[in-house]
Length: 550
Ligand code: ISL
Image 1 (cartoon, rainbow, N blue to C red):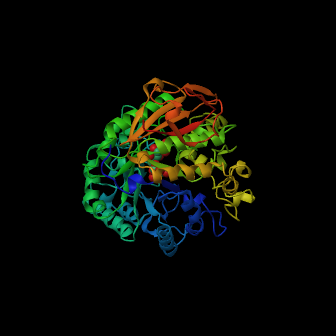
Image 2: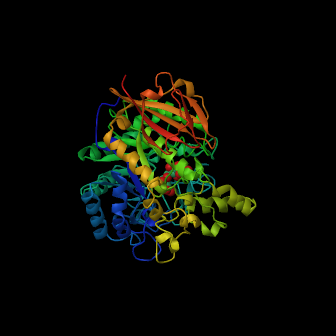
Image 3: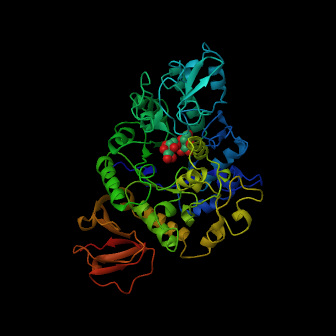
């Protein structure tokens, strides 16, 4: 049991991808004014924290993850005045705001980089990573997330610069103390405005290995992450900035195992408060219950009582969970509620990605021109350049395209789903007439209403936050049934999930006969077919029981 109780451990986080949330001025992009107009909708869900994707000045090559001015707001999103009003309106509703911060790299149009690239002896040359080539080739054979090489030749100064993502996103050199000091000053600029923390983008990439040796397998890009020296930087970040504020910090830590994750979030480490790991979203392409259970088991065993995990199954980089990991067809509503029940009753801070609360689904566009994501477009070009059939390449990339979850929020069944009065920057999912906020708000059995009840349960029962987690052995190897308890003091809950398109008849555990079970929440009406020792679970049925004390 994790003894140190804090506000952020008890929170539910709602992620706003603002450019797809609500467009207040008809330019086809969502904006901060639009977000302000929809804050009551978010507050009514019951969430505590809003995570706002990057809104800083940016040429927008990677939708704001290429920052050209850390202390200005991208005009597409609004102005600093509107941002100040947003923060004040979020706080006025009793919610908190955490900002997405990208400090592994900047835009290639950031003044720092323009200076750095201007000459080899510019004072900011060493704020980025410059190396000589080898026999006319890049310094090593590494690829980046978004391009075949992690190195870009710069004719003007006759060297290559390093970029873990797109060419337009040069990596900062965290070995440079002057650079680090400037980043810490900028963090304080935002914290002194009153924000409540940061989501730290690609934070596991800050350190690079000495000498940049070639990789045995350049396609396995984990060499970009978790290099020696990384934790020295994060600990210094905490010493210089984080520990001086009552905030929450969540690290986006790609390619970490539970043991490596503990180095980031162990409370004795004084680095970060919590993290997103990607053992599911980056490494489990489709739903695999046994693998998911094993991942949850390992993370619980290593972190519980020492550090705090987070629970999510989709975000702006990963396609919609009901499509990828559930059933977005005949059982979409039940499946969306089952996935939500699972994420909110497993140990860790639950994250809701905008639209998840109404069961929005992934999308399939017919041509590459309808896609926006630089990761997908770069990969498409790379594969077609190899001579592969363009249609086959498109089909191979559609399922995991990051654009799947970036289509506009579906507010109602009017044109463009009520997202914009202009032309949306990316097509609205054609199913918006069936799936939209207005419809869910008017239906007492909607997914939105179910999320409200789930979050309300968390507010009333600390067992969801601080309760020990234990799977019932009889179902540990079951491919569809996920059966576990959460226990805090005398309070014990039993969660039963039937992740399947088929019904399942489940014998009740002898310790928990029907007479001991008090149903707290389910995504189906009570089942008359239940008996004292068996429950009849329907497809994608989820149940949360309180165990009555004997
Ligand atoms: O989505 C992933 C790969 O499937 C993640 O590993 C992700 O690409 C990576 O962890 C970094 O993502 C973050 O930084 C990127 C930006 O494009 C993503 O949107 C952001 O979430 C570069 O800033």
